[in-house]
Amino acid sequence: MSPLHPAPPVHSQQNIARLTQRTLIYHFLPLVAVLFACGGHTDTDSTASDRPSPPNIIYILADDLGYGDLSCYGQTLFDTPNIDRLAANGLRFTQHYSGSTVCAPSRSALMTGLHTGHTFIRGNKEVHPEGQWPLPDRIRVLPEMLRDQGYRTGAFGKWGLGYPGSEGDPVRQGFDTFYGYNCQRLAHHYYPYYLWDNQERDSLPANAGTAKGSYAPTLIQDRTLAFIEENRDRPFFLYYAQVIPHAELAAPDSLVTRFAEQFGPEKAWQGTDSGSDYRRGSYESAERPHATFAAMITLLDQHVGEIQKKLEELGLTENTLIIFTSDNGPHTEGGADPDFFDSNGPLRGYKRDLYEGGIRVPMIAAMPGTVPVGETDHVSAFWDVLPTLADLSGARVPEGLDGISFLPTLGGGAREQQRHEYLYWEFHERGGRQAIRQGDWKGVRYNAKTQPNTPLELYDLAGDPGETQNVAAQHPEVVLRLDSLLKASRYDSEVFPWVLADGS
Image (cartoon, rainbow, N blue to C red; front, side):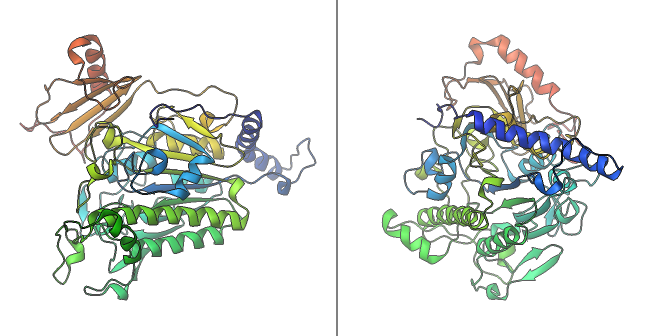
């Protein structure tokens, strides 16, 4: 089957019944607790130990991984067998969208359930020598919601939603444990001088000066596996936000060598590799960009395999929902070559574009015996994850979200899957960009801030997923409708204002 023309998922009656039972139990657990606390009773003789525990949740977020960068989504120049196995045993989404086309706003949409016309972080704004604009503490974000449901919460990898010690610090946003990079800019380097262990710096002396002794993704992986081990007997939410394959391009030599012969001689990419503090600056050089890129994703695939193996060893596989995805489309920085790898597959555009290649990303959901096996063309986005996991865990869904639960698509209950009326994105750099999808219609406007009267481009994704034919002239009524929705889909932000070129 083509990645854009999926086979239907296999929703067995057993799968549906199992997740329906789980969901009902989680919704009523708070009520049961109240009854016991008040001296009440139920009509069953079952004890708390008889009830199944809520499912563990592992959300794996790759960084700048394109729609075509996995072999189960069409990649042919290298294989991703462990991620492919996850897809073979789960559900592969073919029309899933990131929150944005760059890191911070995409992750803000994930954490808040709000798209970029409403979410709090709408760009990669740095406000501190180390870190980005913080999420405010007045909102209830995904990890807080799950922690309130009794989950142990851990974040490992890249944060980018609040500098150390700010209200947006991950340990102040509902995570019990954090290990990795707080700052997105410092996460450009794979051999950093330190990582953050909660709110303490974990110095990496093996990387002092120009040395490269401690590869950060490996350190992050070790702490991730330890978190699973430590919480084997209680429900946990693991947010695994690895930095691979974001630039710079860097991987262990043993893996790079594996691909060097395959890709042959390469032109090196020259970065910034000098100065006493160079790992706070630009990307380092890459001697073999193609081989290194393939090695990085191979390592990410191995890490996913190690997580699966750890769950199997602990007997947690059937009680753990794993979701794998990427924060936006493929990048072109630090020597990366998405055209060589066909990283966006059949789609147009890359990171920072609002064409499909910049925002349509791979997503796989797996939970053996519960989530159906197959493919789905259900249209979903990052802002759907919070209401979905609220639905799964029995948490109260905050009012006013842009997201809708896709739990029915995961086999959860007999109710019909709700559909989006439309999806909306805005990007504040490069003159401002907006995009909207309603059904199979896709509207795109570039220079939306500097030239707000720029005509809206229109594409029919049903027959033209690569957005090659602008059909706006043939469908003026659709353009008018989408243009109206664009204006109604956002409110202004004082922190990220939609300011026109004349300052109005």
